[in-house]
Length: 475
Figure (cartoon, rainbow, N blue to C red):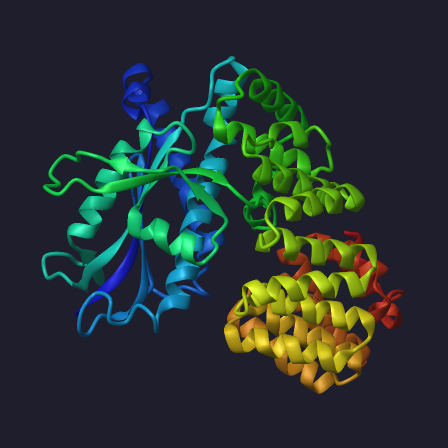
């Protein structure tokens, strides 16, 4: 038994009663089942059991509602703020993941069979309301139930009430408490909030100050997430239909975002007009990111540089300039901007990893490992840092060290396609064909892109003509 700090998220379908009143019970049951399936799939993508234990995450899905509770720290021994600093990294990670879950759930729900049928009938998608709160909960076994530990407390009640007023929003319809906004602002989680206001909530005697998520500052957090793999399954003809609907209904925040992300992922320049923003700096940043994903690096750099004329210390632009120059093969320019980004945010895991990768591409493996190891000091459970170190040791020719770090990456995330693929590369180079095939098979099972990668990768040169390899990559 203990008091824990928790992030609590509630989401439900807006206007669900209208659906239940206007269709037969079997249709309503299918509607609810689809919502449950999307909730489970989104939860499992973003909070895999390998990373989140039963002590760290609770979720319940009933009717048209999901409740997600993330325990972002150990038991609070003295007072609510006493362990905040020592648990800060976990709290920030959970805050970012809860936003990604809120965004991912909305986007996945937008492409549900139910909403696709609405779009085909010239109706707008049925929306979700989402509320996020952070506060103390009592996490313990309750004798009246037959389940394990669960959470109780005022913070959960408040989160539910926040979700209730979220449908009053004019942007994302994701509302958060002021403490949650503070965590995002202080730790550069790339979302923008409105100015906020006090809301009178049923059953809450002290009206809270709430903020609505106004925008996603950096689309990269969505485009590079596992959610995009699911969103891209939407058929091309449906994407066109969604595009036309989004053009007609520009005020539909998430519809515009969904189509913009899908077009970017397919390298379609029409994405740029859908992802435009009113704020000059943020619009330049969104457009620069769009050009980056479209492969037009010169236009991306031009927009990032215009941002620097407005705000020379805007970390995301400096960081993205660094990775864009690396894509162009200008490693000195890449390092110049990544170092400037690191000056602004010395504890940035992503900046250390990117500097390490740039040095590796320059052929300076020792410098590369120096920065990658620093990233690991910042986050000892970083899957990306472990994989990058493993790849660097492989290029350096130290296969034993490479295997050591890649195996650690696999311990952190057993479903890592990248870790499995890199292990397959190492074992193939070591002439261990059986293990190479085992890990390559698993990588392809997790992500079909590794079929093409393996065919083009010289690390598999020794087995490319063998039947087992052909079977894995050509089926």
